[in-house]
Length: 381
Ligand SMILES: *Cc1c(COP(=O)(O)O)cnc(C)c1O
Image: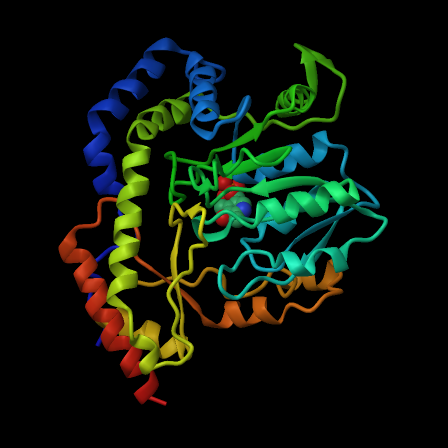
């Protein structure tokens, strides 16, 4: 029997209720102003996001995908170039590399953090390598110190995919502030989400900032004067207004997510007794995750997921396939390095409900369900 979920996977509606007065007023202001594209909220948001991240520049863009594509285009990465990235991410990571005209070079992940295994990067560098695009998956920043060191040695750009890690801490910096450019996403279900598609790019480089700004607007240096190939990657004013309201509460939300993660992790101690493959997320010293996902590993995922559903708790798999195993990528992009850990993760990861307004009752429901379902998933074999 499949019962109705008693806990949502993510609850955007209750978050809206909390912020309604602020959000509604800000949207109304934009509606009254008529500046639906290019309104003053854009610069205001860019300044606030740059300050919050600790970077000199921020550019609001139409999606996380654009936020990765624009830096590649602006850095002149394209035909004949290779970009090293992880094998285990949402498809947009590899997609933007291909859209820019370059070839993605997939490197395996560290099984503990699910981020690119820095020990395997150098073996993937060739004379064609131009950049490394690490992904800070599930909310935890990748090993950027080591990646930056390798990049410096081989004269490569580093572009951090921060679509899942906006606001995450890395040592004394924040996600997005440690590389020449970084792109994040404001897709509604991301840690900082708007009410549609959206994204932002971060950089400390003045020239790159100008180039990306021009590319965002059809490659125009000034109105109707196009000196570059560009795209339309503007973020509309209403989304910026929503993000300004949501940013006010964001640091509190990150703390709330961390408290839920801590509750989960503490409650799950000992479950490896039932399933030797069971693991809770590892956050490395020096990192503060924003918990885009709280992701377990488990032996019998299908049985576990079905049992969780019966117990009223939805779960999701991020991601059931590696990027190079996706049909189009398998046919059109080369796979030259071992990706055993990435394929293992694709078969065994499972994410639990995670949202800042989760009540104690809801987290206790999730915890009880996981305990039951882990034991059940092994006995059922
Ligand atoms: C969501 C996501 C993207 C793409 O962001 P969109 O806003 O959906 O275009 C890119 N990379 C990763 C890792 C993501 O999770």
